[in-house]
Image 1 (cartoon, rainbow, N blue to C red):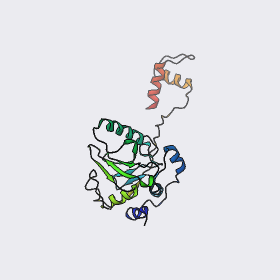
Image 2 (image 1 turned 90 degrees about the vertical axis):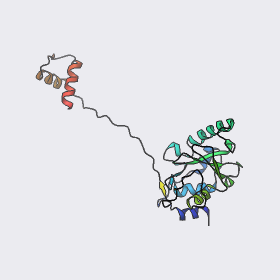
Image 3 (image 1 turned 60 degrees about the horizontal axis):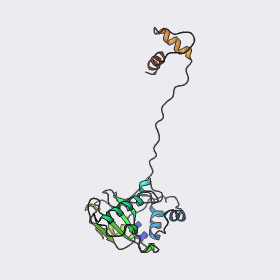
Image 4 (image 1 turned 90 degrees about the horizontal axis):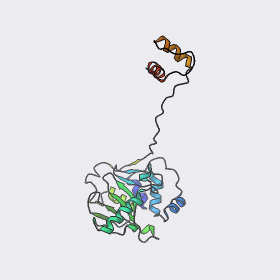
Length: 225
């Protein structure tokens, strides 16, 4: 049985398949080939979170921060490079061989160890610690990692002990689009209407010419309430 078949039995995917992914375009944009198990995983589940905790980056991520081709992998690698060069905290792998593929609600990151670069199906998984120096390495694919962790076979020291107290699940994520608040606009008003209101309320106003700002503001306040 394939790794994706085992995972779908353990953690059913959404009933509706996600949009088709242009893998040629994704790989061209990243400048590297991707593991076949990840392509199956992304095509089966779409963007979302496993067991309310593990987020896997996806080409159709709900935001740029969880998008496989977004800015996060490069930013995380840059920070790792600083840590690697300083040695504090220690980074066990060359950051140029680490590609962030996901994260957790606690702040850990999941990485592909992209070595050898030209053999993506042999890449292993590494997990850092959100607020500490520990790293964990899994000798298998991303799909194997998810299956092993969610089945309880593998315990990642950085993950919470109660991760599996709830039934394994996958929750698809949807982009939240921001819509600017529309400020209502008032239709044009005939200046004679303002003049009549002003006179009725004790203001002196000429039959022609500019209506003062004071009168116009008083009219707007009175008619908008």
